[in-house]
Image (cartoon, rainbow, N blue to C red; front, side, top):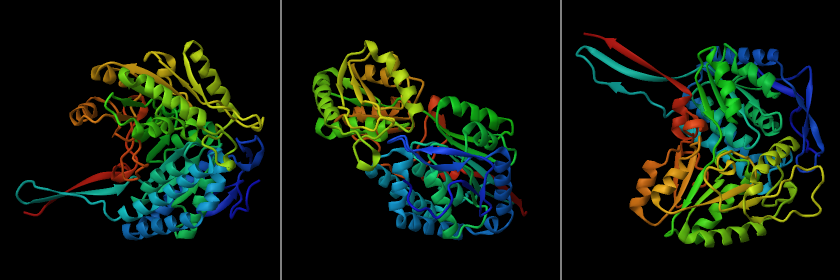
Length: 481
């Protein structure tokens, strides 16, 4: 059952006002299959109204607000997020099926994004360019205008923070389309933004189906920049729709990220990262370390110790705070189990025990560890978005690089070795957006630019790079003699 909410989840927020939509959708608790509530099903008309409201804000109070004041709004919003951490945590636990500890970490990360971008809002500067005698040339960073944000269901709070937070800091007016499976924290965030003093229309939220509200936002001629996180297939559709209006798109798509373990690695330090980076959020993470590349000298040791870790993990309803909760929906469960059929010919190393008392209508799947797995096998190539990892043995450094780069993705990689020269060689050789040396994820790091290459997408979120992405550069050349 939902706690008391300061908003009606059946409503959208447009131009500072909560409005009912013509139709609604059911929101399901993935832990037990129960219905949480009805949510708004935004139409193309709702999206159009939201874009108009955003442009009106740009033409009015929001567009006139200084960078300093924008930053103060974001800072106040961060303080409100921290004040409402318990409610945000509860909503994410019910809505996404995320274990309590993980949901709370996401709420705190959302506050941190607001703090970071609140402090950064007035620190994005232009440059002066030495030029011909009699000229002064300089550059300005300006907002795109109305930005669209299509956010997935796996990390709603974190992705809203790194996307919407950066866009607002730069002075854009935002239209946010949260995933229909997980929109409650987005609606609470919008409610808190009003309380923090954002002018009406600076942030608008239109929940609904991707094929309806998402598509309408992607092709809307009034949107000047789009940010999308999700699957490669949907990202391709979003980019195609945006191309009709020649609109830039930031795409953060899938991954099949490797962690590479050499014989000289500190295995005690590596083991928690090897396992948890693959199983966190039930493996529903774009940067999940789903491939573990292990040099043969330590392969048997790694396999045995990871097997022990798998068997010790707990599975259960999100509110019981297990290690691993359900997938987001029974639809995703069915998809995952279909993809898992490709593993029928692979050696199984370990499975996490499934409790007998799991709710029968919950979207639970069994975490599995396979190995040794050929690097070209579908289980080592395809993004499964579930709690499965594969162990791939390798012999030489060149083998490790070839295997690590041997997918269509390039989001994140981890390297475990004590050899400093090897670390630098791997950093240069790996085709990814992020490389972690003797760690994986660096604790989240809101300051660390994030994004991929290949079919993992393009553009960068997080850190100052996101601010640059949510701005356009204007060059001014003044001739004064």
